[in-house]
Image (tube, rainbow, N blue to C red):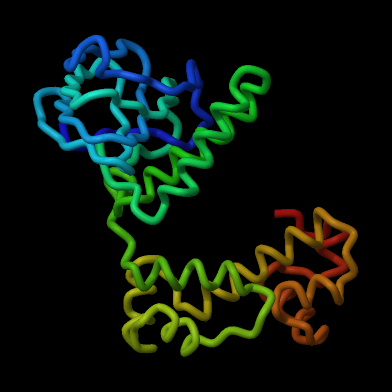
Length: 260
């Protein structure tokens, strides 16, 4: 087994968090967890076989193995790892995740999350669960994993989407986004439309207005403050944008004239 399909849209059901120490009594362990996933973060070298497929364990690698899968460990001495045993739900699209991979630059934050989960587990299982859930998403994003049945997002499009979300409150041009994504203006336009069905400008406007709707309906922030927070500080332009894209004036949206 090289990859596993995991659903991460719901919080995991954490059964145990701990530090496993192996290789003292025996240099080989063969076992499975019939109903639980096992997440391990390694600090040693060993050989691992997952459902008949051989893998190498190295310090800084992380494994995620599904329930009912037989694993065989061949240790080279005392071997210590962080582990979590957990259940996953079935909501959302499954992600294809390597059963073992190098944490790379994410090793430090991933270790911190799992150690926080370990510390919280005896007295605050909810906090531990939150840390484990975040760690699982971090593991899922180490490799270019994606939802089964969906196309992989081009790195330039992913970079553009992230930049748009981070800078909704600022002036932002397609040229700036393209430069940050490392592609030309025209190439980004083609990639973005293919991936999202929208132009970059259209998507940016839609995200600004979605945020504006939220602030108008869910907060008591002043309309000028909301306009500035979505990158349209000119009140006349903001009024026009709300009428065009949301179907009512800012005050009308706040008063529930358009509640969709």
